[in-house]
Amino acid sequence: MSNKNTTEAKEYVLKMAKEHDVKFIRLWFTDINGILKSFAITVGELEMAMNEGMGFDGSSIEGFARIDESDMIAIPDPDTFQLLPWRPREHNAVARMFCDIHMPDGTPFEGDPRFVLKRNLKRAAELGYTFYVGPELEYFYFKDSKGTEQLDEGGYFDLTPLDAATDMRRETVLMLEEMGIGVEYSHHEVAGSQHEIDMRYTDALTMADNVMTYRLVVKQIALKHGCYATFMPKPILGVNGSGMHVHQSLFKGDRNAFFDANAEFNLSKEAKHYIGGLLKYAPEFVSVTNHLINSYKRLVPGYEAPVYLSWAHRNRADLIRVPGYKPGQEKATRIELRCPDPACNPYLAFSVMLAAGLEGIQSECDIPAPSEDNVYKMGEAERERRGIGSLPGNLWDAVKLTQNSDLVRKALGDHVFDSFIENKIIECKLYQQQVTEYELKRYLPIY
Image 1 (tube, rainbow, N blue to C red):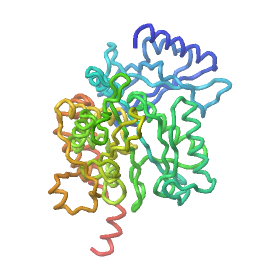
Image 2: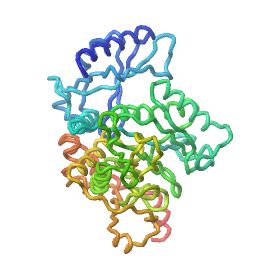
Image 3: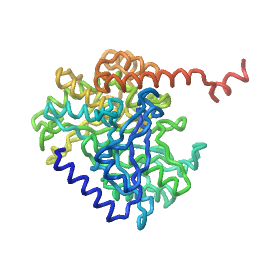
Image 4: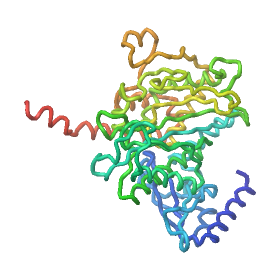
C-alpha cells in the first residue's frame, strides 16, 4: 500500500471512529496455534497506535518471544477497521482492527503468523500471482462447553424446524455481512447439530482475517443464545467431524491461471502442477493444517474426511477435488483441498498450501491420473498398485514429517517453524501420558 493510500486509510478510520462514537478499539492478532489475542485501547490513542504502534509483552503469547526479548509493538491495519455489532452501537461503540506485530526497532516480527502469510503472498506476487481462497468451516452447536449434547438431529441440507440453531445461523450470517464479510451459503451439515457457513472467495490475507472473525462471531452468537459453538475437529465418536475444505486458485491480473478452455477438466498446466505440489507435500504440511491431537480422529476412513493422497473431478473421498466447470464461469475454476480442519491457524495453513502449490508449479511437479473410483473401497494392494499414499495417522507422525520438511521451514520461517514443532512435540508427549475414559472402560474390568 502506498503512503498516500495508507494516510487516506488512517484518516478514514479516524473519521469513522468519530462518526460512530467509538470509545474502545480492540487490537487483534493470533498466536501460532491460531488463538485470537486482543487488548483494547481508547479512541484517544487510536491515531498514535496507527502511526507508532502499541507496545505489549510478547513473552506470554504462544510462539512469540522469550522473556528476555519480550517487548513487541502491535500496529493496527487501518484496512481492517470494523465496528463490533454485538457491542453497544449508540454510545461508546467498540471497533476492532487486526494488527501486524513488529519489534521495537520497527522491523516486522518473524513470529507473527500474519507476517508469515504476507511473506508467502509476496513470493507469489513476485511470480505474478494473486492467491484466492474460499474456506468452508464446519462446526457444532452444543448445549454447553461441558459436553456434546446436541441441539438437533438434522442431517445434510435438512430444513429443521425453527429452533435455536436455525436462529443462530441466521444471526451469524447477518452479523458477518454487517462486518463486511460476504457469505455465499449456510446450511445444516451431515451430523446432528453440525452446521456450515461459507464465506465468499477473496484474497488469502483478507480471508485469514475473516476466518478469525468468523470463528469469534459464531461463538459470540451461540453464547448470546445460551449455547456453545465449537470448531473442535472431532467432538463426537461415530459421526462426521468438522472440516475446513479450502477452495483455492491463482490469478494473474484478472485472468484465472488455473483455467484452460482446451485442457481436460479445463485445468491449466499451472493448476495441474499446483495439485501435484499439494499431493507431494501434504504429508509434510498436514501438521499445520490439522494441528491438534484430535484432528487425526477426524482423518479416518468412512466419514467423508480424506485420508489418501489422490485427486478427482467430483469424488469427495479424495484429498483434492476439482469442482465441475460451468461455461462462462472461467474465474470460478479452482481446486478444493479437503484435509484442513477449522481449528487451524488460517495464516499458517494458507501459507503452507500456497508454498506447496507454488513449488509444484516451479518444479513442474507430476500429477497422477485422477482417482474417480472410491479410494476407501480399494484394498491396500490396489492403492499401492496405483501409487496412492496416505496422510499420517496421528499428530506425532505428522510432526515428524514436518520436522524434516525444507518446504514447511521455508514457508513458516525459522522462528515460527521451530516454535511450532516444539509446541506440538510437547502436546504429543502430554497426550501420551493421559489415561482416557476408553482405557478405563476397556481394561480396568479385565486386568
